[in-house]
Image (tube, rainbow, N blue to C red; front, side, top):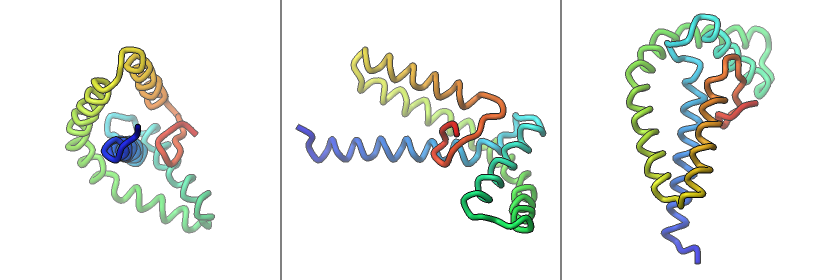
Length: 134
């Protein structure tokens, strides 16, 4: 039977996954280890996403792009500080989730993570609002 504590655990797991996906999507374009072309694509992807969702005018798109560019150095600095901590926490969470699974589900979970990592590392990828491929 699915009791209340299991429901809370499932909700917490879902919230952690969504938070991780959102953070990954939001800061992915600001990673300083990317070259200028990739970083530009990230900014352009965000501008395009917002433009489609908000039906921005050309002037608004230019203004939004300028906001991203104006804050790029601060975002890069923040990412350099946060990235190692985020990776460490992500590994801890993944390890704890894997420990909850039987061997069959653990194998499936590890394949799912590997697939996600492969997609996440693909150059030129487009991400949707949940951090998944578009």
